[in-house]
Length: 127
View 1 (cartoon, rainbow, N blue to C red):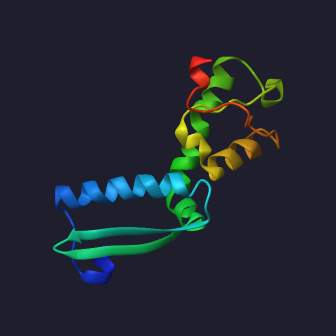
View 2: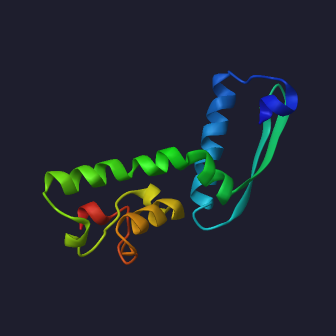
View 3: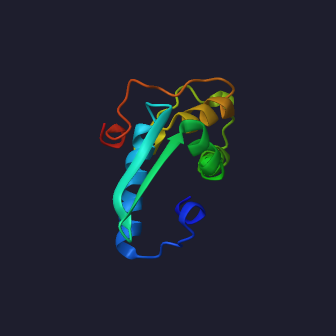
């Protein structure tokens, strides 16, 4: 986006580090909000970065990554000689499982079975 608007291809490590930090925040916020604004003052060569990002656009940009989360699920079922219908509960682990699209894909994969929401995904392994 920055390159499209300014014609500048950002390669500076400091600017990219700022962008990564703000994109990570955006990912977290989009788990509970449908649109956010990413703002980075003095992003590159004293130019600011200001962009709106919707959850729908975020999901579109990352759909291939989200779909790849089903690969280990399929592998576990295969290795355990299990069918989807053999699964009683779906417990998600890790912060990225808060992403609504991942929850939706898993629900669809398991034919409408909702992943549990009563367990904190950051603490599930320790419980």
